[in-house]
Length: 581
Image 1 (spheres, rainbow, N blue to C red):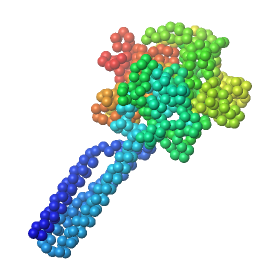
Image 2 (image 1 turned 30 degrees about the horizontal axis):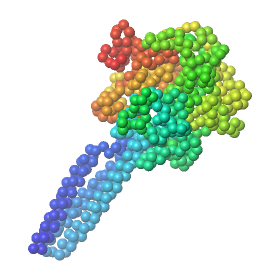
Image 3 (image 1 turned 60 degrees about the vertical axis):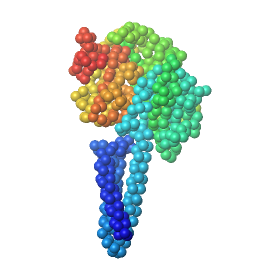
Image 4 (image 1 turned 90 degrees about the vertical axis):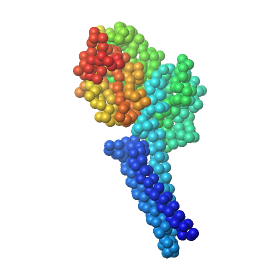
């Protein structure tokens, strides 16, 4: 009877071990086929090759090592079961079988626990990076909450996934339509019921940043400014999340997002405080240029500018002044992720090929544009910080360095010094106000813009294009930055639509070799990397050049579109007969 019991115990151990061995082989096969979400090297600065990164390699090593050790332990258990079954009353062999079985079982338990720990750590790392805005497949690709922003959000600062943002940054969001102000601003501060700003790692507790004031001048662009103590840490970088809830309504009473929806993005705060003043990088028209009177004045800054200090209706808004003997009436628009300001007058002088109004500066006139610095809080201290809104400041509140000498002198109204004159440049004894002079004639430019080149090329297919590739188009004329609007004039379409990613638009005037061309970028989260996902940038006739001519007929590359054909636009470099206009 005892022998039968022993044989049954040994047989049970043997069969259990056989099942475990089969399970290990099955798990190894499935594990090898499963996407563990580990292709994150690019998001954290580690090298990658063909979708394989350092984490993948390390986890693979641990995976195969544990699998091998698990199979060894199971084989030992099978061996112990065989010894037990064949002991035949041999006490020495029976004791050896018991010890072997116990030791092998303990080893297997340790291996299983090790596997669970490795799996937990791997999932924690992956989910943390995904939540912090890494650009890979799945939720981090920009689908879900992120793509809901395509129809609701025109732009925001800091940008999605932006790194090394200074701790004293201001946060700005521009909606595509006017918003019910009380949903965003409550008693001059952020309405924290609908706008949640918190450390990403503290998502569950929703710890909000301290003391954020809020302001808007048009109901579309909202700026949130910090009061000390600032977010982040002087010794450690932190990721922060801005979350807009589904309880925000448009000014017309419609919901901004669907019920239960919303929009969120993340950025990384560095340990630094930004004390560097912004500068003017370029401007149109150029110094002493003689331009057609329908030219638009464009000012490009070297960094994002606080929009509250750079947009509004003139002459009431006078942080930027356009003067041809008297102050000109018009409106200043901010665009290009808050780096570009443009001025259009109220003097309509015609219509473009799309039938839209064209506005003109005075003909045969000398026109001086002056950009004001803001009043410094501590003049003479070297600090560029200004709490005033009477001049241009950056997203950290630093006042314009108009004379580009890296010293904060403040505006003429504060120090009595004349503005820096770009036509007669001198840094000595000038304020930080910046001005330049150009002239107009009585001509009107009516030539429509066209596309000179595109990237990726139309001959590419989705397997040739890297998921991080930034599509762009180079126009043969300077483009009006404020005409580049998501969905309205430029779209990034996906097929299937479930592969849609969040995108935002930027532009840059070409360098000196092509001084009269503009490159327009469709920045985006990483494309969804599936075999069936394709993407199509669509540029529509609402795009305007710097003379307000619309992109109609829409010619490009080797295609010369003609309104007489019935298809006045191009698709993939050829005259289109079956593409969306």
